[in-house]
Amino acid sequence: MIKLLSFFTILLFSACSTVKPIIPPKIINNTPDYRAVTNLTDFSEALVCMDELLLNAKVSPIAISSENINNLTSTSSFSKGGKEMLINALSKMSAKSNSIIYVRYGPDISSILDLQGAHPDNAEFKAPDYFIAGAVTEYNQDLWRGSTGSAGSVEIDSGETTASGLVAIVSGQEEGTLSYSNNMSYGTITLDMSLGYIKNLQIIPGTVSSNTLALKVSRSKSISADLTLGDVGTTYSISDTSKLDVNTIMRSLIEIGSIEIIGKIHQVPYWDCLNSVYDKSGRLMELSSLYGNLELNNKTTEFATFALMELKYLNDNEYRDALEKSDTKKMNLLVSTALTKFQINNQLMTSGLIDFQTFRFIYETLESNELLSNFNDYLLK
Image 1: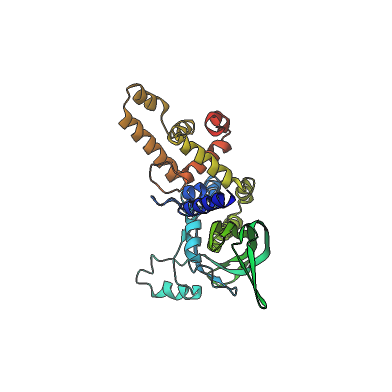
Image 2: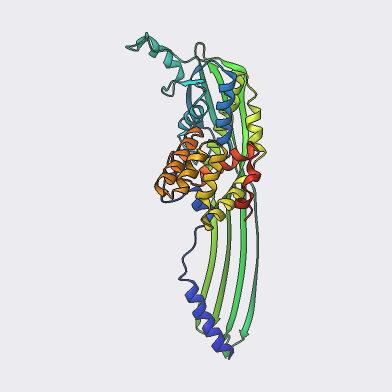
């Protein structure tokens, strides 16, 4: 009876091995494979906040250029696209305020002064007033590393031992083993940035930024089971591994540094924008779960529709009139247009569709306007 049960266990293991791994919903929500999404970090909302802050302060625009954001660490893992990340951050901070004019030039800032004299339209070409320099200066991949695990085995049949001289042969042995492991590593990245005058290449005292962010470099867990029945054996294993790209943290540090430097040169309370983001740290997993529940219950579009009404992006009367007439085409067009306006205003991928990134900004906007409690019927399910 035991052998028969063990045989069917082997068949079960073999059947389970044909099941394909399932990508976690959080990963699919953040990076779907069916449409492009805006590349957002935990600090993207602070960039939009800075734009509003600079707009309300009515600051005069400043012209800025930059050197490459270099990697001065011993690792080659960092992207060479730091300058593009910086341009992206500066652009988002000036979308409505027009507070920053970025002059793109090569890696050598000092040569830009020569260009001003040699430029064919030098009457119109203006060298920037300031330049930003920066580099990744520290990377500790293994600030902390830990693992836990356990294993156990059970003997079903000890088998038969046959002695032949000095050699003992065990045959017909039957046993099962089970093991579990969980691993995680934790590291840090530091980025230094500074602001200087183009006219004399001098760094402006106090307009510097030096920030460190931690990252869970990798996380993995696995379970494996082995069953041996005489000369027949089978193994079944499950593993789940995720790894955060260091360049995601690099982008976040560039956004933080640019907020700090622009805030200092324009003399605005930039820390308010950063603090509002820090207060919401660790929120992405919660929001991903909420979004997943809305998707599961087919409530995503309904939630977005009434949220856009509350935020005055969607005309309440116009939508309800289309609803009473069962004019689905017009209803969809109104919602899509409202979503497009919201996405443009928050510098998101303009699609007119509700995705996780758009949901995230709608949620945060409702919260900042103290309207979130109106949507408990959707969010508490």
